[in-house]
Length: 172
Image 1: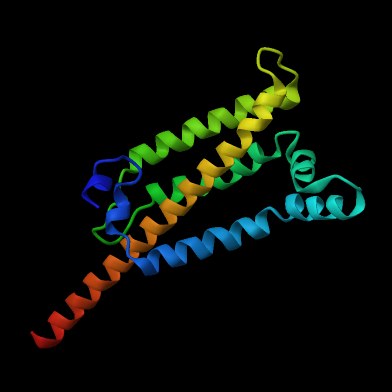
Image 2: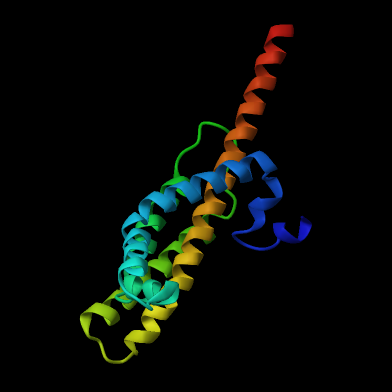
């Protein structure tokens, strides 16, 4: 875990326990499942209605216009709130500046890629821009997961500190 403390964005993993990971994972999976209903439901319908399409073909048809960039941009916004919000406890979000930088870079990639795939810019191949969308979406989901786990760890630590202080006051 000492190695993780030296890597920006991942340093907070050293402070997260299994319950925070479990809650963050459930939150991200359930959130993404419902947020992406239009994508996966249309994909399922295409698989059953078009013969020979298959899963890969359905994924390509559903995400072929750069839709994952729009979803990525939408899920990145709340990270800024989680990272920058004022906390009434002593816990500070680990590597907050790195998170802001990562979000801004990913948002810029999303803007450029949507401009390429939908705006007709010819200096980048649209197929390449759409192919990269899967990686940008994955990176966005990882950032959402990490920020959620760290936020839960900070809240848990704060609750433990407050509980300890309350116990101290009872005995005083």
